[in-house]
Image (cartoon, rainbow, N blue to C red; front, side, top):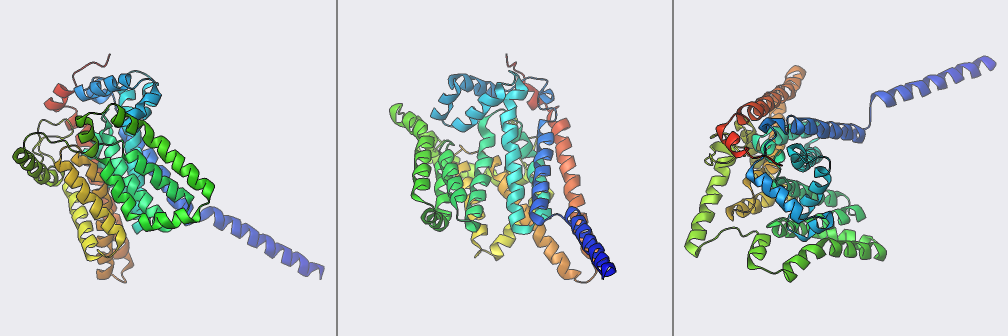
Amino acid sequence: MKQNMQVAGKLDQLKINSYKKAKTVSLPRLEVETTWGILVACTSTLALIWRLSAITLGKVSASELATKHQLYINSPWWKSFANIYGPYYFLLHLTYAISSNAWSLRLASVLLGVVTVTLVYWIVNQFHGYKIGLLAAGVALFSFGQLAISRNGTPLSVQPLMLVALLSAIIYLSRRTDIIGFSLMLVLAMLGLYIPGGIWLSLTALALSWPDLKESFTGINVRSRIIAGVGGIILMAPLLFRLVVHYSQSQIYIWLGYGLKGNALHVIHSFGNNILSTPLDLFLRNMNLNSNLSLGHLPAMPFAFTILSLLGLFSYATRFKNWRFRAIILLMVICWAMSGFNLINPLALLPLFAISAGTGMAYMLKQWYVVFPRNKIAKNFGPILMSLVIIFISFYSFRSYIVAWANNPITKTTYSKKLN
């Protein structure tokens, strides 16, 4: 009897040890996804701060000098929210307090770029898993346009972040109609009002998530509703006060996203040119040679990434009944139209096309598995080959930015001003 009890005790101890070992070796899926998400954020930070100031020899552009001047106008920090791009200038107050140089002036854009790439990973992870999410994050981070806009000391980096943040809130609300999702959507919709033309993005996001918003609103208590309402009023109040008390027609136009001037015929002509040039500059051949956010005639997104994005759009078209894909396409169309009014930068569309590229990769792998349904070697070779292609193109694009862009005569001419 005693011997049997000892054997049973040893078996129980073996089970406990094996359970502990299994628990340490195989992490739950949520922990794995979170771990990779942290790695994406760290990699993005390292890539975006690499030679952040030294790449232009510590000098800045005229637009960055204007950002610094606007920072002084919005001093102290609590006055930031009384202006368009208020949240950006609030963050800039925090980063510029570190040191008064080009590095700290661009650090705010770097932080916004890191959040943008991490949200791209999270969104694609929700659709296609964390492996495709990692590759899509690489597409988002190492597209030339994203590198340029995230390392520039101007508020341009707010635009792509707001797009993916609103899309993230829509997806979160579709899965969890709780106080967190409701508050997240409310805060982002209010912050979107601080971006020129952002009111249309906020209204689109609210319309797409309206059924989930109503469900989450009915599920929270009265106290939480009052807190959410007061918080929304507090976020909106400074900007509305500025627009109403210091009223000017130009400020209203900027807030609504209307950036074209001239008679009706000129506006229509400019709008048409901008609409046509946006896809050309992003994917085929950049025509704006005087821009410091481009390199010669090279497009903002590498050609291979463009092919993946087009495959993703084709996949969306075949599954257009899926509301998530309709939301992505609708946001793309609205931003494209806003770029026609010359106030939102076309580079703001890059994260959405990175998400589309993630869908394109998932579509290609699905077709690959159809061709090789039982060949394990071929099934494993497909993801490895795709990963190598993304890594190679990402390295090439990053090197082009660090070396070629830095030595471009236009870059040297643009970044020739001293900060102090």
